[in-house]
Image (tube, rainbow, N blue to C red; front, side, top):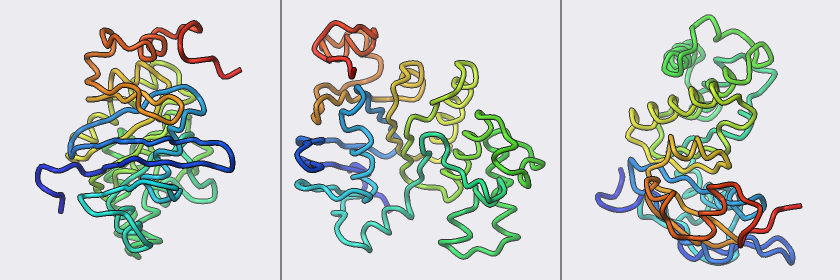
Length: 255
């Protein structure tokens, strides 16, 4: 049960280094229930590490992560968080050896031990939510287009009705029209669930479509946060350079 009036996810002064490389240098973020936050920034700025830390896949060196008002510490807390979150991985990350419906129902089958008949029924219902027909259920991922694979991955992310969904570069590898269709589905399904969403992307069209708020990450710190409507008038040099895709500015190209 979500804490009334409080954020569903909170990162407080989170630091993370890998050897001598300091990736996160004191991240502070909050995400409210029902809101969509998109994290932007150049390559290697710590966006993926931020999500991995929030999911308990990476342990911060310093700082605290809270989910639904409770500190995420220890195996039980991490397991509870994951039961209430969904994830759409970059590239979809579908299992080639499983059918489409088995991919969608993966958590139901292998975590919740739901019977195969019921799990398949639920999978087909969720495929319909992302505009895929029941006839796709018994196909293999390799038989689908890239856009269809993304839809399957979205169906998998929403099937357990999570309170929070993470999206890692959800439109990577898609043409602009297919990407826009996927963005529309993300907005539709997140709103239908009343869930919070945290996304990372380089695609500014996606940012403008799916975000309520945007946070700019640079050198392991949040250098700007605001409503998506303020992107073009932020007055922030990092945001201005990133949004306009200019090589000149405070962000150095990763080459």
